[in-house]
Image (cartoon, rainbow, N blue to C red; front, side, top):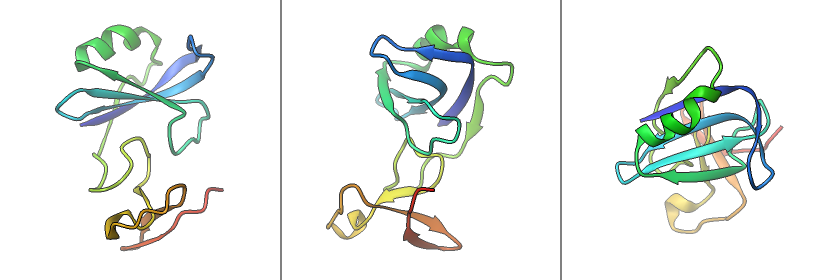
Length: 116
């Protein structure tokens, strides 16, 4: 299960990251919380691991804007858990990952991802 939310106002973390949006992903073994700085960021700038969704809610719910948590689909198999679009490391599916290069699923096929 994944959900994302917008913060009422930018939040500065102890490691000096400005957070405007967050996403949680329940892996079944823990809950990843992804932090996003820019309003259009596709991937996170930092992440945290929590034992439970309840702990995430306790720490973050008061910081969320009126929209609250917004549900979204889980990532496609092999895709980045923090990405808002289907995004995977190029070649990873063939056992030859090209780290730092990505591809996205569009119109029924995987194509090279070029950030705008």
